[in-house]
Length: 454
Ligand code: EPU
Image (cartoon, rainbow, N blue to C red):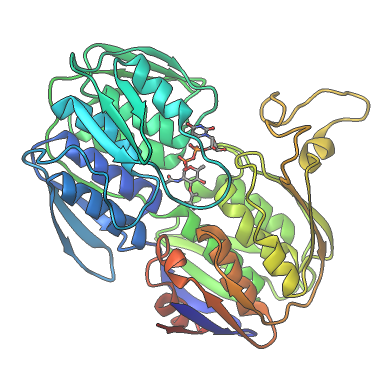
């Protein structure tokens, strides 16, 4: 599947955010923890939720989706676990490993495939496995699957994550809500999507406390009940659309976007030369007419509440239009700049290096200590990973034929094509469909010239 895009149009109008991909998929898995029906409102109809639906169906869930342009709704009901060994799924994402906890809780045994997902680094799952093991699971890594058992059930444990991994935090929470006793997760991820999952679980009857300093405490309960829960809006879509609006010199009301989820993005946008107006029901993103020149910035990605790793790709495209040199220091994934080659093919001037560009820029002269990441040095410092980018601008982008590498670089391709001279072809559109609902149709409503070809 391809997108054909003609650049040069200002995008204007309204676009409504879909429910958050990275909350919806986990919530579908959470529904397996109860034998009662659950309803997820504001449900995104995207590739990743389809893949997760296949996983849940093969476990025994009955699923119905009611589609609506104002937010679809998913009914999911798993009265019994028919199958806890789900190794042959037609497509893969990062979700199956999260089913280990719920399956262990309900039937004491589970097998899920080795993970797929984006090609943005090795993405190991040691933190997940260590946490489940501490809770009493035995996990065997087989050729193409993880096999887990907990014959005597899962029990609470004191768990210190070596990095605040989103998936490992969610996995541990999903395993702990029905485990016997209390689980403490130290150095937990506190991304809004994690908190949204916690809210859903609380409404199902779970007892989960979010303490200070990345500590989460879970008191296991005997059973959970069904729930109707409205999924938070997708903040990654919001950032993508904000960058689109400013990059094309347009004005876009992103409906349902929430200021709270974008605290550390809106500053960057304003420093670059974009503006925003918080309105009832959404945020208007635009480029004021007087801001003829965009300004360079230095960004470092971090776990929440830092600048999110999923935001750097659309912002990088915007920075190709800024007057001067910008830097992006990626500290979450070691290999998330492959898309830079594609932008350079279009005329951008971006250099990727293994040096920690951001950390250096934040150090006061002569101090010699790492201030980045709350005092922790970058995990990739002194290693070979090309995890910093220097972007020189402004550069005029020209159309190109590109192949999508992963979801977020796919949206960078789309934004670049929308500001480039000429007609670009982007193959691998299904990768973008994994995370962005009907992106072509929604962008056309803003005036974009984008066609989908099978
Ligand atoms: N990590 C390990 N060991 C583990 C788990 C993680 O070393 O056991 C490392 C990873 O390799 C990575 C870092 O820890 O370097 C962070 O990974 P994390 O586990 O936090 O990421 P994730 O749960 O796999 C989710 C989102 C990503 C998003 C990250 C960071 C989902 C399905 N995915 O991934 O979203 O970038 O958190 O916020 O929730 C996307 O939506 O395009 C996407 C990639």
